[in-house]
Length: 291
Image (cartoon, rainbow, N blue to C red; front, side, top):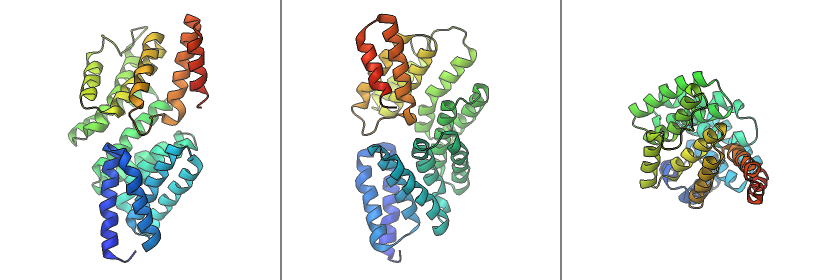
């Protein structure tokens, strides 16, 4: 790409795409399509890598994971061709954090996310670095990392997020941190989501006031896992139903590569066995059919 005006437009669109991802995802498709159109019509620039990575993320909304992975890999290859090191952290987050894990095991992306965090810190791309750190810690929990080691990392990243005032990532990691702490110290104790945990209730209240649907869903997703582990199936099923109501207002569900539907199915199966009510068996079948 040689036209200075077009290159400036691509840089402006890249900034808009980044913040649309964080706060207004319904605007993402039109912004990303504009980046792709400029690339196809006027050639490749550094921001083209970002546009392709964002497009791969969008394709996952349509369950076209194979095409998403193909486009995402192209965006990573273009990084070196365009010498776009300043966008490596962004692209690693988009591809390895939101796309790649639908096609290969999560563990294969863990190191890339950590690398994306380090690159972001070195290049001054703090927001993207923290996004990589957030996804790295979330995926570390999902793959069953040692809880004691994970707790240390969560504490360390949490302090950094507060230091750099990236509270979105901090607040969305907090439910995982509380679940990990609960699992480490509890012996047949009640689930952490409930009257016993004031901090979680405060976090939920704050997210509800701010209409932060992502963090609300985070609380219900990981609270459900915690409740299921401790055998509080009624509480777990209640959180699933509340989460599903919130999801109706979102442009894209948080599914964590099928993990959410898996635990939904487990909870509904437990309720079906406990109550002998056919509705839970039907819900379990619906949830597990999505895997």
